[in-house]
Length: 110
Length: 111
Image 1 (spheres, rainbow over the protein chains, first blue to last red):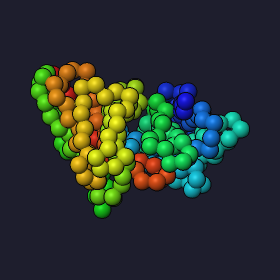
Image 2 (spheres, chains in turn cyan, purple):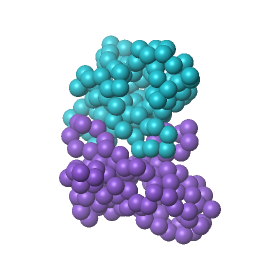
Image 3 (cartoon, chains in turn red, purple):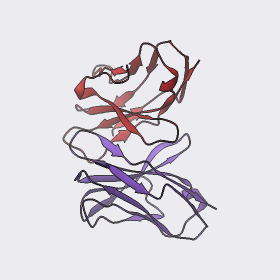
Image 4 (tube, rainbow over the protein chains, first blue to last red):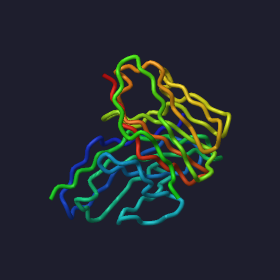
């Protein structure tokens, strides 16, 4: 069965420090992977798709098929990055629904 | 382009009351979803639809019903509200492999 694991429920860093939010997945095929961000009391927004290989708000994420990971990284965290982050997987073949991890709450302290 | 629109934004219900949470999308997406989000529990899928006239249960469908008579609308019905249904409800839509577009949520309290 497909599964997405975000091992850290809470992550706290200081402003300017590097941040890495971990995401591991369990899937035998080639999935599409996503990171979503939810700022306080707002809707979830798409942050990154692995297929587009882009950098949004200074965040990047690399798909490591060997380690089945899709960790989200930013070299210098900002206070406005404080939010809930969800990793999600879409099985190949246009499956019906995304599989979400339970989320990591990132707090960036001044 | 409004995306996914949810109404109402907030609602307080008494135990046993009924209500419908509305969700409309203007992107002509075939796939639509209802999630609930409880503190510290992530997102749980209630129901989803792959197109007009087709719906299916998610992880936590008990106490809810849905219908999909048009591509645009995917209302969620609570028939007999219970305190356990206090949550934030998100509707989402998708097309292809782009990922979900979420609505802004409905914060529901059952007292």
